[in-house]
Image (cartoon, rainbow, N blue to C red; front, side, top):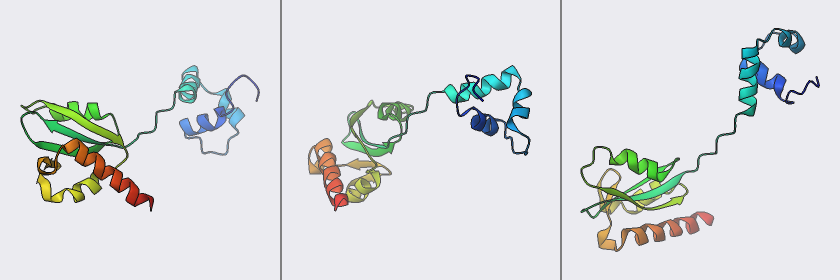
Length: 144
């Protein structure tokens, strides 16, 4: 059917309206209401959502040596904002990188765990440098 509709029109329409009966598409197309047609076109023309990318991050808390090692599939700054709610001390995003390294970092720094995802890495030096170096080692060991 060359009526100016996108090539995927029939597949999207069938999926959108759960058409499973053997009735011919052309017969079904004749009964589409303008609202149905708009719904199918909106779905076809909707921009694709970006693929989520895991990010491992390090968050610090003002006046404390503790850092949180975590990950998010969204924006680390948005994660920080959610964590900040209900916290009396100011928190800040110290570092982040693409990839999921949270579990490996938690294992590596288990002896420095304070509670949950919070660690005191101050005895090892600058927490950002320590975590960055650990992630580089993890990347190298996983490349083997």
